[in-house]
Amino acid sequence: MLFVLCSLFLWSCGIEDIPFIDPIPDGYINPAMNNRAVVRIPNDSPGTTFTNFAVFYRIYVSDTLQASTTTTSVYSAINPTLASDYNFFYNNYINSTSQVNVDMDRVFQNRGYKYLTLEDPNTNIIRVLSESSLGRSLVFDFSSSRRPRMTVGNDTYVLWRSDGGGLFSPRPDRYFVNSNELSSPENINNQINADVVNKANLSDSDGRYTYAAMFIVAVGINPTSYSNIYSTPSLIHVFLLPD
Image (cartoon, rainbow, N blue to C red; front, side, top):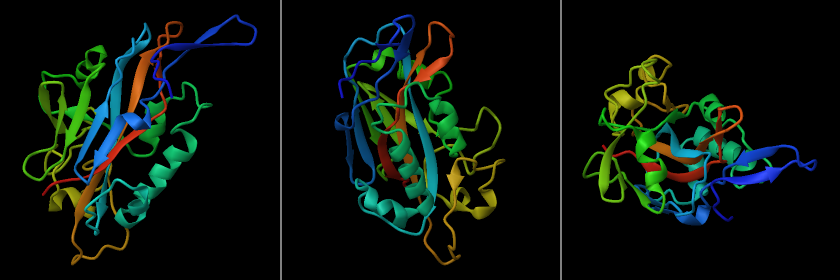
């Protein structure tokens, strides 16, 4: 699909223009193994309605270690809810040509997804993923040797989990790092780890791994209503969180 961030669809009567944002094509996203992905951002002119890209994520507890998560066939083994969530997005929105300007903020948050953010309080991810990211590559690195990061051009940022604007308090902290506190069923609720979903029927003796699924959308402003408009989502990868 041609990446045109701000194209116009016309009503058949020709009276009203509808701003529309195309998603990042699947071919521009290259996942590798279970810990790395490269998203190439096209260099097309964003026009007047595009503002930034946004990344939504959700963390899934699992008892299964997958060396590679580049195929969707492993999602059910990781966590059935991961497979259910992915199938929902794929069947309804990914690559859809009819779902124009759906409120993806509402869609993702209704599925338990949160906005990705950055550790540095002085660095707003909206600014990082604004027009300045066009023509660059986003490199997501979840390797076990360091805290997961995103590199944009020559700049590297440590990724942080959401706290819902203060609505919940992630434990043990906001890094994308696997731990007993992160996967503990007692902490998976709307007050603590609201960005995590458990896997049913895990015993205390089962190994506890955690995976983060991440999707990217383009965001714009409707010049008539001044409300946000969104592209359909593209899957970045399902990352294994390092210990």
